[in-house]
Length: 293
Image 1 (cartoon, rainbow, N blue to C red):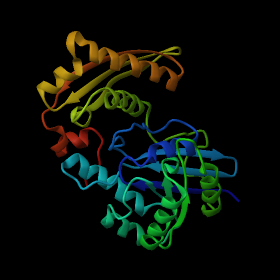
Image 2: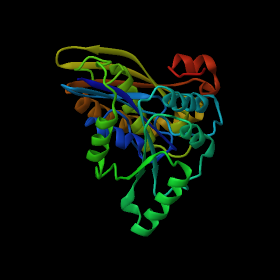
Image 3: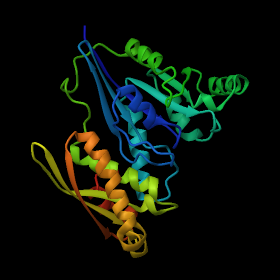
Image 4: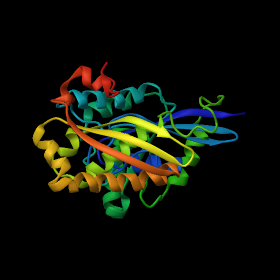
């Protein structure tokens, strides 16, 4: 009998959800940086074997929204509770267990299996970990608690074993050779945005959206034109940098990453444009593919 199901990964920002998703799928699907709110969309990564298909969903970290973009990010996280067959709630040894009680309450009302994963255990010791496990047991009594390190893949095999045991019998939802539900352009956007997250400080990365205007693929080469949108003229200057050096660095690093991702030579051209207050505009957010309702 074939098994298939949706395994959705939720939790607060910066606890290692994207790193875990990449470890479980065995491919680099989600961008992962040390900065909070790196993931903005709900991204699926599909793990296939002959007798099984696991559809993983990485979701944005749960935040109290301060602007429209964050409302959309919260919608992606909340919707992940509604259609999961198995829920992975990721926390870590640093955050306080009751940091986001409202969302935890929603999780507790789920009737599906919940694996509560305490990540980054290499940053803790046995006594602190035992205290954390007890605290989480009282907060989420129905969850199975598993200490993990997504970065060093500690207990990732055990999580996979538990997921396989919990999956329902079902035919596959996607073609067996499909790795994600996202188009190629999406990953171009994400990889460029990751480099911006890594190279710029403060508010700049959070004010940026990337749009691929051209993606032309030949047998050996992909020609990409990408626009980096910012909210202010001053931000445009920072992104470009003195004599264009900052933008050139981002484009070079992104091109290298894209060549690894697609296995082809990449010709990448990047432009910077101002789209005033796009993070608070329903129209612009919909244009950029965000879920608002």
